[in-house]
Picture 1 (cartoon, rainbow, N blue to C red):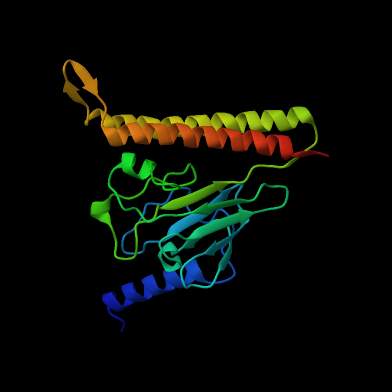
Picture 2 (picture 1 turned 120 degrees about the horizontal axis):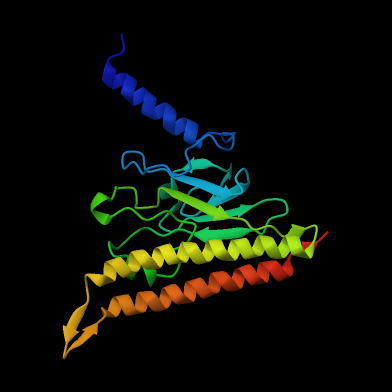
Length: 224
């Protein structure tokens, strides 16, 4: 008879094997936003639309090609794994991940690429695992580059611009809440923490860059 501990170990082994084996599981087989489990630090790599191809590279591991969604052990691909996603009729996107090295959102905001609309909120440092602190999920939006009419194209990219604005607004709200507790007063003036000032400037730059990217993609898309 196999005891309970042996059965549990076998279950974990089978889960990891299923997450990393080929061929990848069919689209939609994983929850939309899985909780990060420190015992099994896997990241859900997904795309919008789902069912596209992604290549994960970095570190000393060989490149991993997957069909989204797919659970991936990003810690095997170094401190800065790259997720490169593409699909027919879609604009290719590459995202470099970063290990979380700070508890403060304001500090991560000023680290290039550490905060991105494609990334789930990073786990807090007090919950760090030995294999790296990566987000629970990475969901990369692949924008369309081919349309039947100009009106269809403009309507699509207007919706993309609204989504980007709302997503950055949500991050800005989190940053405001964090920085509110660090306000100081001197000579009757309420002063903002220096790191928070840098973070708000970085956020404004990132938001503007994402808006510009949407406009570039809109102009470069084709009308069939």
